[in-house]
Length: 318
Image (cartoon, rainbow, N blue to C red; front, side, top):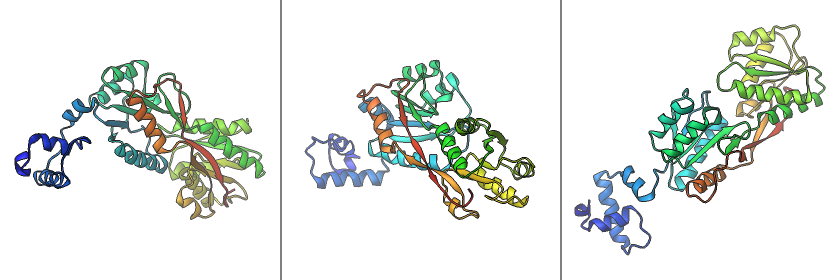
C-alpha cells in the first residue's frame, strides 16, 4: 500500500491508525486513504489487539427467547454507542449453552466484554471468561446478581403497575398470563408475582402463544374480570379469542398488556399497556462497559443499573 500511495510504510501506519501526533499533511492522508480503498484494505484484528491490548469485540449472546422490539431497539442503539467508542457489538446466535460450556464458546471469540442473561452464568464460567481476557462481564437480570454487575428490568414492578390499574378500574378478580415459552416464562412469573402484591389471590394463567390455547381460556365460564396478559402480543391474542367467544372487552373482562407497541393504539378496542421509560440510556450502559474495560470502574458483583420504569398508557381495553 505504501508503494501505491507513494509514501513510506510509517506514513501509512500513521494515517490508518489515525495517530494524533503524526505530522502528515491532509493531502498525503487522502492519498493513503484512496490507496487503501483501491486495494480493499481491511484492518488486521489481531494486530489491533496487540496495539490496544484488547479486541474491541463486545459479545451479546442471544437470549433463549425471541427478542421483542424493546430489546432490539436497545441493541441497535448500543451498537451505535459502542461503535463511536471504537468497539464492535456482535450478537452471537447460540442460545442454549450455559455455564462453563457457554463460556468456552464465547471465550473462543476473544471478546473484551460480554453482556448476557445472568441465568446462563456460573462462578466457574465467569472465572473462565476473565482468565481468557474478557475484562467486563455484565448480566441482564430481574435483580442483583451475586456473580456480576447487572442491568435490571424489574418484572414485578411491571405486574404491580398493571394490578393497581385494574383494581382502580373496579376489577375484583385478577389474573395474569404466564407465557408457556422457554426464556420468557420466568419473566412472566415475575410479572404475575407483581400482580399478587396488590391482589394476593390473583390467578396464574399459563398460556402458549396459539389461537387454540387462547380459545380454551376465552371459553372458560369463570374468567377473572381483569387480566394482565404479560405483554401486548399476548393481550392481542387473548382479546381476539375473547371476541370470537362473544366476551366483551372491557365490559366483561378488562385486558391489558405491556410494551406499548404501535399496534396497541390501532387495534379495537385500543389496548391499555405498560410503556417502558428508559432510566439508563444506551450511552450510560456503554460508558459503564468502557469504564470497566479501561480499569476505571470496578466490576462489582451485586451492582445494579436499572434499565426501565413502567408507565401506564390507558386506552379502551380497560
